[in-house]
Length: 298
Image (cartoon, rainbow, N blue to C red; front, side):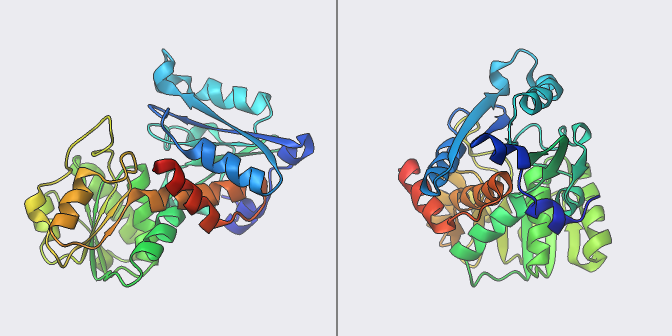
């Protein structure tokens, strides 16, 4: 794979040549995404003209099968890049010419940059989560962290939290074989003593210092709790990735149990900061984007 620093610092040449950047988001059920507003407002603040288009697979009869044609169409229409979300973060990989080291290690892509005739996949999930987590819970104990969800977002966060110095990371997934496969891959990179898989959430949380929730449960269209509220306790911090709604059932239960919490909005902003940088080649104002996000979510 290409060198990560080289790939991620290269601005999309074709985008600048047009004077107006065209970017978008491919995913299912994305009509309430705040990405268009965040990117377009930050572009305006920087004197750029940018249009962010939602490409919702729920409105396509083919669903995920439409992905190859959509990537080709975006390239043909001169898009600078695309964000990619559920259920396409792994399905998009075979359609790309190259991956950043980050995306290759995580096995998932959430940002595609069209660089001349090449399509390069990146992942800002891990860095976006880390940015928000450090901001919300700077003193969090990382001695034993439980990660609920081993899919695309969970994989990216797993790398991020291990790089931040987590002592032990325990993966839990509704598909135990997926958690085990992810744990084995992470152990090969970070050490077997630092990563484990556990089929039962209650056993995983015994003695844990923190919980990261990285599944869609709790979204407006998938309401509910990803685990019993009785497993939460005051000495456990809780990090959520869902931000529609910003106050999920899990966060309400965590606050009621006395847990320190980080909401999903911090990751949403962190992801957008990374994607904006990749799309435009410019450094975004992260705090300005955070303030705008809070205005939108209110």
